[in-house]
Length: 379
Ligand SMILES: *Cc1c(COP(=O)(O)O)cnc(C)c1O
Image (cartoon, helix red, strand yellow):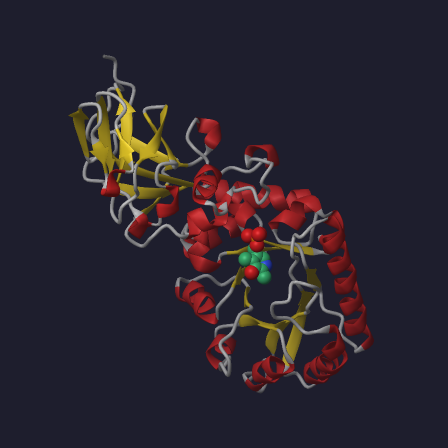
């Protein structure tokens, strides 16, 4: 029989191949589409599993002007890797000191009066701490409530005059609950910006839109967007593929077939025998499991391609491995198994794994475990 499969590099069991040129191109595409002055590339959670440092470098090359992360620790890791671009972090431990962040020029997302004072405390004599003031517009997470805004904004303006803080932006985050809710949140945001101006704050940036709104809610783009999933080439929409949005998925998760065996009809497969072979067939063992982030919930459902042919996980995903029933296809040890990547190349999309597991594509790429080496695409 003619062999059509690609083989994996010898000695490689599993890997996530990261195409950084896709991250750069996606960033460029989104910035052009939104027509904004600035783009904050969100590289939290290890760059949604792609590697924060490589994602940050690629996004900056693609025209990002700033980087965004959740934690100060994530921001400091970018600095330690030699990244000098502005970085903002917006989720803080109670009572945290911003001293180290200030020394490393990390910008602080401030969601309360107390955080504002803590940020000002970290200022040195001649260097203010840069802050982004986060306002609540409906998501019900952190953010300065409308009734607290006059007091917080007045204090921010006073601290700015004293040279303790520099207010870089007013920002918020949308719920993506629908057109009407997003419009109401956008109006609330605009009221916050006006309240800031009447307190004497005129920050250069206003950012509200993450990827979904950057694409679908022009009125929410303000003069800066703050995008994550889109720069990794994945669609935030259930009904539109990355290709339809002009985005290219940056991560390909693949493994080498670790074993094949020919079995008769009625053979039980994997723990619990949830799957039994309907006929004599070939089983291929794939060395990726839930410890690597392959969702166990996708047992019996997750798609793969081997040599351009599509198969489905047979039985349960185990900690380190799962089995695929490949029928009579000529699959051999060492053949490349692709779990997901760029669907325009004929491989499954991360979104298909999300559907199989009852989750979203964000979760699929972000959960890929530390045991999976990331390799930068050589192209
Ligand atoms: C994660 C996050 C983003 C990025 O959202 P995407 O949908 O991935 O573009 C933007 N802003 C905040 C506050 C976030 O937490």
